[in-house]
Amino acid sequence: MSETLKQIKPKQHHNYVAFFLTLACNLRCPYCINLHDGGLRYKKAKRRQMKADDWIKAANRLVLRDDLPLSLQGGEATLYRDFYRFVNEVKEEIKMDLLTNMMFDVDEFIKNVPLWRFTREAPYAAIRASYHPGQNNIDDLIEKTCKLQDAGFRIGIYGIDHPSITDHILETKERCLKQGIDFRTKEFLGEWEDKLYGTFKYEGSVRGDEMKHRECRTTEIIVDPAGYVYKCHSDLYNGRNPFAHILDDDFNEDEIEKFRPCDFYGDCNPCDVKVKTNRFQIFGHTSVEIRNLKDLMENKKVKEMHLAAKE
Image (spheres, one colour):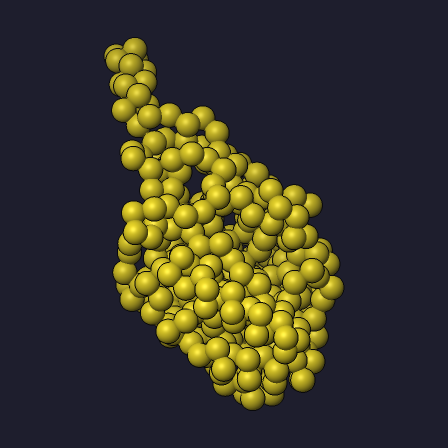
């Protein structure tokens, strides 16, 4: 790896760049999207993490447009041991968004985070706090939100429209809006009482009856705590089949354009195949594009025929 890495310039249709600084979280939500595949949160949280120097080096090779920030998430990104160093030492041109449960010390955050880092023109707040009833307290969230707003940060609260708490979420939204707080709801993605919730582009991609082979490509650059780059969230959360490392000198935006094979269609993460809004808040976007869907047994037979023909 060379000392000066080549630049990464996401293309116009690339919609998202995210560093998952850590998969650790201080909440225990049973409907967490990170646990869609049924894996152990604790095992994932212990995955190796890159050092701050490497994260800074990775961020500094990015050349981002005004409409495309670097999103920090996890897990809970603020649990990363060098979070404050990272947000201070990355080059100033990089604007950031933060997805957080806001369980951190707000006074410490205000003291250590430069306001300009999370300031940009966008149809949504750069700091997006998630409300999880029974896990974090709405009164605490409102108090912290007001304090951050007074310090000049633009922040919004998001609640998951889970079927078991819909009424409470809507009541909380009304309460926050009356106090001048931007509160938005997000669609619940996953199973609840034997029903699959979510609006998905590809039939059978989530909780499918059988696994199928297909090829897919993403519109995102998503990087796990160890620095590996994946074609989808399902692969990232499972630590499965990374196609590059963010510090690979030959990794660039063209790598995102490539369709890559996968045998896990049917166990897609809802984040990847959900029909949603893009970075401009225009509805109809999907993170991945899928093609050449085949039954795994059919694909196995084709391979066997090719092998037999060679013999």
